[in-house]
Image (cartoon, rainbow, N blue to C red; front, side, top):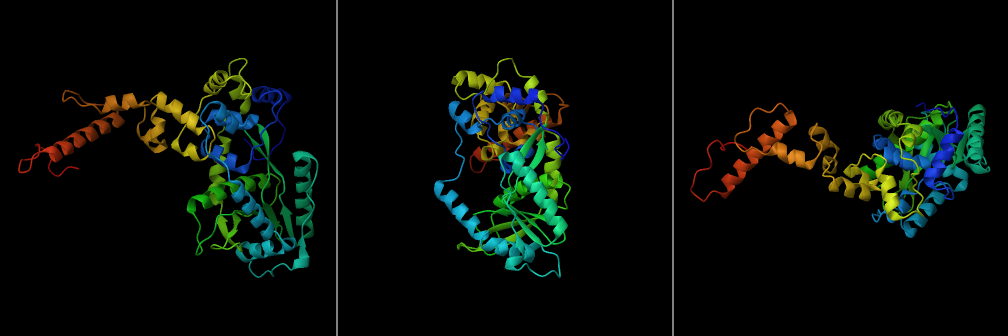
Length: 387
């Protein structure tokens, strides 16, 4: 997969994705949050297809009887919008002063209120807005000075389909450098913020940076994270290094199987139209391979459904990716328990994972036997010094 969106999806693919979504169902657009989650689990064909087809996974999960508690409250949503409006107030001058203070070139003066250009990026449809953004970026680089692009639209090719993305803002420096700005409503307390939330923001910013690089511009490897300071509504900002996220996201997105291949492997007549019966929808979801992991619970609306299916199948994926990797060819919990059994007559084991499980089971049995021994009695032979 190239970072540069050379072509739109073929007419046949668009028609096929519309059939999967439902003929009268509007597509749900992909955003940077979903792309970052998809990049974190590129082996999940189920999510790749559903996201690429624009299926509303939240509605689908409800129809399957396993809804996920996702989304912001109305209060948090309104608070976030109010904070963003404050950050971008005064013609973007305050925001660009934060950009200059945290990621500006050394020795350059801060922007004055009247020196900030905020071009109009409105246009009909995402394609029109993306083209207007491209032209505004070219003009900003050519003219120099400070430019603030408020909610620009950029494009990125993912698994053979073009995705339109909308950053909170992009700041263009006088030297032509472009900085992604992420505005979040979680606070920075005493100079630090929740690492998990900062990491999620960095992954989203990396997706935007890849899309900007596809336009050929000079994109900063640092993003600006703007948050409320302490418990106030006053903005503060920190630079976030994107180098690791950029490399990881680019590599993971390139591993995604193209949507044409996934769709071609489906049985005839499969659809995820939410108006279909729940049993039919369950069969349709089951026809697309998934790669469940506990991390999905915080990033995917279908995670609770996939967890139920993984538990019912006794799949080791429910224990986590790290455990799954350590178990090698043991793919079910039943196989793991069987490998761990040691009746005293078991011979040499060639499977390192099974050998480790047997040894762990013996150590556990010896420890339990030592704990259960009456006071004053000796522990079983060979258990001394082991844990």
